[in-house]
Length: 93
Image (cartoon, rainbow, N blue to C red; front, side, top):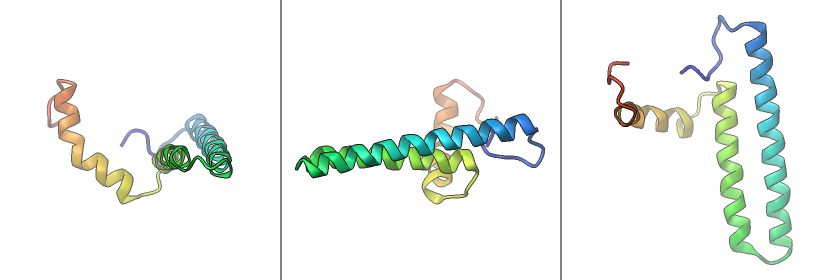
């Protein structure tokens, strides 16, 4: 997967990956605070929607960090060929 760290990553790529990871962490934190505010004001449905968004950000964070996770890698592998077909790419690519 091109988005995950490799042993040949340049220092610039490592730095960029770290900054993206941190930005995703800040976004997840902001969503967590937003969710808490919804819960505090009795808006349970909105709380759940924001929590789902936060969990999606955490999945993206795992992808960027290269942390193997079935909920990330398994899903991507499962739909890899369908994605390639959608883009008109050769399935062998």
